[in-house]
Image 1 (cartoon, helix red, strand yellow):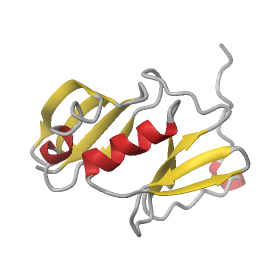
Image 2: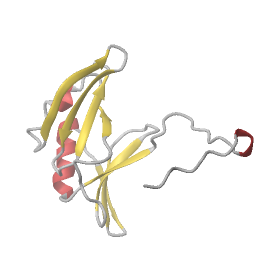
Image 3: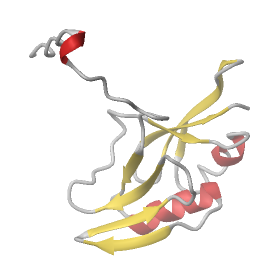
Image 4: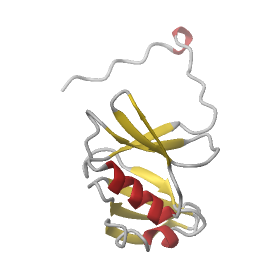
Length: 139
């Protein structure tokens, strides 16, 4: 395994300035686009806008926030329960979303757990496509 490159001296490099979160966009891969969109529409009680272009189908999570994402179907979009883990916002109390997961075709891996009083709570689940996902909320 190759070692990471050594960081140059501070006076030779300009630090990248990040305003807000390090996350700006996420994509959740799907094997069955309609099923995946139905799953997230159901657990969040939303209606995702869909778009079809360049061989890809995308359904966008609604909102006017700095961070957002989409369900994506197309070449290279392969669901997985290994690798990166995305924590979705569970709202004021993640139980509202978590309690809809199994009815929507998902599976709860870890029920709501406290992280600590400051950080709040989380839960882990497998979505309708086999992606391992997480929910987070303060309550």
